[in-house]
Image (cartoon, rainbow, N blue to C red; front, side, top):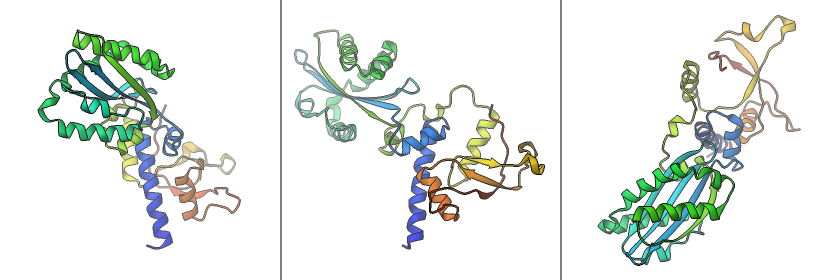
Length: 275
């Protein structure tokens, strides 16, 4: 592969990540840029396990909460009649490793995991009822542990469970790349989408890269933004310094040795009013 080909491939991968992040940030370009750079975490993972020795019930669970939108993203649990796997489960591992071990245990558990589905549903319903988002957002591990312990105890109506949890920050982008099913991923934009929102989404699907920028117009020369029409060629300035914007500028010979992005030519596809 030629150097230019490698650059285009890397640029394409960055663009793919940026577009995924845009979906999860409701179209906020700055948050999407930071998410791709690993500097914006909107999700907290709660890794945990519990034991009810008297009744022979042992379980592990993995919860993902979107703290930015106050949404329950995903809840999964595995309930078993013996302590073998829960004893080995390491909640202080990264959530990705914990998730991989969890999936492996689910595949090998067979019919012995009866009751896991019912407990997952109970856990999901209860978490929203307890409004756990506030304590997780404030990183109150003890309060979060107390809430989950109470939820487990109410479900099994018996002895007080031995419960242990750990929390870890991550992002919706990381979840999607790991194949975690994200409930309501297409409903991140709050409120009822307008026609302009739908049209913008449709346009973004047709392009390879989405980068922030601004139109350069000159009232002195008789050209106002309201006078710009679809199909016209205009000058555009990319306003971000993220990897995608810089690579686009370099490919168009619009990046100076001093690290400045120069205006580039573009054609107006469509004008949309957003607010």
